[in-house]
Length: 359
Ligand code: NCD
Image 1: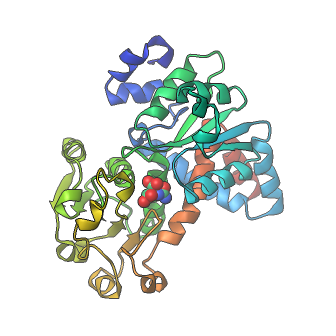
Image 2 (image 1 turned 120 degrees about the horizontal axis):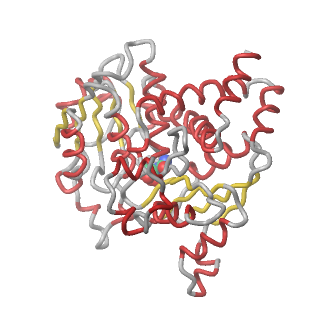
C-alpha cells in the first residue's frame, strides 16, 4: 500500500493518478481525502449510494435522526469556501448537521490573515488544528490536493473534501449526479450502455469533467459533448474516456443528439473565468438551451439534469416535466455528502447495522 507520508510533494505530484488515489485512501480503500473523481471505483460508488439511501430512510424517524446525530457529534468541521457558493455550502452544512458535527466557516479570505500576507496554505494549516474535517472550495486548481498532502504529514492528519477546485474537479457534485442517475435508472436496467449528452460550457465547467470520469465505471456509456466551438470539452477528457474504452463524441449540434440521449446534462456559461470583459457574451449560445420544444424531442424515459445554478439554459416551464431531475439532484446531494462524511470517519458499518436492526 502506498502511503502519502513516504513522498515529498514533488514525488507525490508526479505519481500516476491510481497511485495518488491509493495515497489518499483509508486502509479499507474508501477515500480519506476526497480530491478527485478517479478515487472512486464501482464498488466504492455502490457503497456510497447504498449508504446514502439507508441514511435517508433512517433520517425519517426521530429515533433514527438521534442515532445519526450521535455518530459524529464529537467531531468538528470547517467549511472553507473562498469561491461563491450557497447550494454546495448549505448542502455540506446540512450533511454535517445530520451527523451531529459542529461546524465553523470561512467564506472570505480577505477578512482573514491572508489579507496580512499569510499564505493560503499557512492559514488552512492553522485552521486545521481547530477541526477534524475541512471541506474546501477554491478558485485555485490543485490547492485541495496540495493541502491534503501537507496536512497528511502532520501527526494529526485532517481529511479534506474537495467541494470544487478551479476549473478542474468537483468530485462531490459528480457523486450526487451519479447517485441521481443510479436512482433514475435502477428499475430500468441501470446506467450501463446509456448515452449521456453534456451541454454548455464544457471548457470551463468542472462538473462535467468529474462526472464523465465517474461514469467510466459503467460499461458502454456513450458520452456526447455538445458545446459552441470555443467552449468545447478538453482533449484530456476525450483521451481519458477513449483510453477507458468508452465512446466520446464532440458536437455543436444539440438538436441532433437530444433524441438519442438517456440523460441530458445542462451547464451554465462560466463567464467568471473570462479573460477579457464580455468574452463569453460574444459566443452564440442560443442553440444550447432547453425549452418545451426540446423536451418534446427527448425520449419519454430520458432525464434532464443540471448542477445549478441555472441561468436561461433551461426554461422554467420545463420544471413541471417529470423528467426534470435538478431539484432531486439537490436533495440527493445532501444525502450522498452525508454518506461521504460518514465514510470518511469510518461510520458506514454502524449505519448498516442500525438499518438492518431497525428498518
Ligand atoms: C457548479 C460549480 O460550482 O462548479 N455548481 C455547483 O456546485 N452546484 C456549477 C456552476 O457553478 O455552474
